[in-house]
Length: 108
Image (cartoon, rainbow, N blue to C red; front, side, top):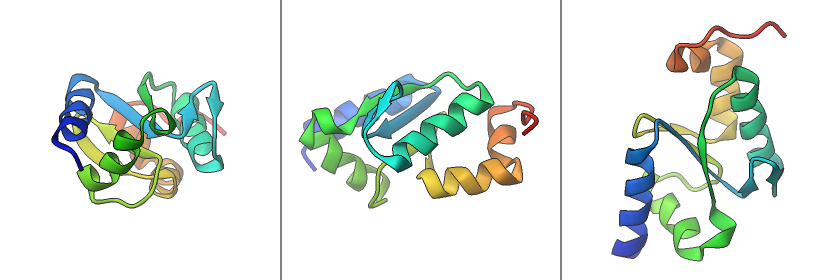
């Protein structure tokens, strides 16, 4: 990973309480996993910053090295890596994700 990509990723992660590195945008996700991650955050009513990794190859590869996690999407909360869409789904279903945000879990 280039130092520039690492610095840009680090700046975004540290400047925002909740960041989702994803393929596409929240309004137009470009893969099912990113779509699921956005749906979970929206269902919980969480405001988040998003980064479309498809727009920058250095970020797309760099985020994998930054987190030491091989897949996208990737969720960061208060500067800490949480996980990808499967981990987000498990945490959502258990109520742990709502607790992380200090939110009440909405009724299904």
